[in-house]
Length: 338
Image 1 (cartoon, rainbow, N blue to C red):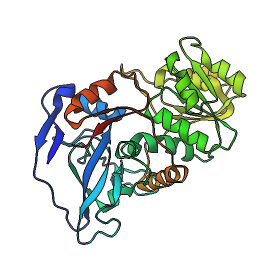
Image 2 (tube, one colour):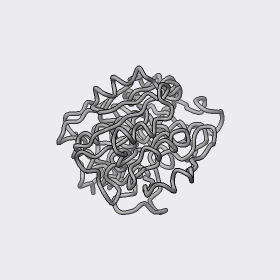
Image 3 (cartoon, rainbow, N blue to C red):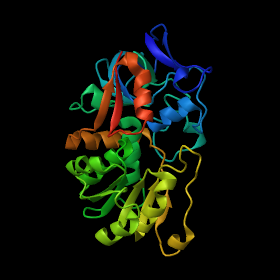
Image 4 (cartoon, rainbow, N blue to C red):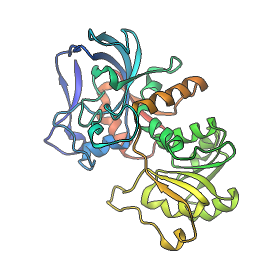
């Protein structure tokens, strides 16, 4: 089997090396998946560049996100059968409940991920995929999709129909949050740094779009237009957090997904703004397998389709990383199966 592995030598994309290994055979509780597509997330570039908080295992196969069909199963497997369409769970050992140190292993980091012809997974590490999705579409949900879903559904209060949700940018998490919020009957305000993307955000269902080059101090404008944002899916980090706080309703909720930017700057809470607010600031980190299955059930019910920016051949994985890292994407960057 062909797969990519992260070498310890080299820097950045030069660490990504194509290798050939024997096709693994499943043990009693494992499934062997023929991977048909994978996709990139910000954490994958952080792992590659050595800035991810959790050190990767030397020689690991990267990428948490991928989709394929089961081609072999161990003797004791009960959850899946040959021919099932599956995706992996980001925190492979986190089935339900709260995240704790015993379940921090991640596909594509401490455990071999999906960027190869085959993936060997414990049957508990996988979830069944909706039938209406293509392989490219099915490969996009594990990290960005579940992060957006958890941001919307993981708090004490789930946004109600008619309430306002704010998304920032046009990356995978932001677009999934927009789509999921509309499924829930919410109104969505979207902020983008590129005005040419405004129409595409409206086409996805955004009720209000603000281009930051035109309106750099957008927080008060959003607050006045909406009466205050009920839930902010804050993917912008240090650059956007102060405006998100200004935009929030008095009892709004901000789910903070990015706490540090690529230059090492951290989110700071502006005291003069926060002392006038009762907003709750919280964090989520992707989600459990049960959360993944709940999200995929909603995707199946509503026949939701993810937004794909571009698809690269397996042999051009390095170019896929480069395209993703340059930042000007709209949706998910996908790598075709080998």
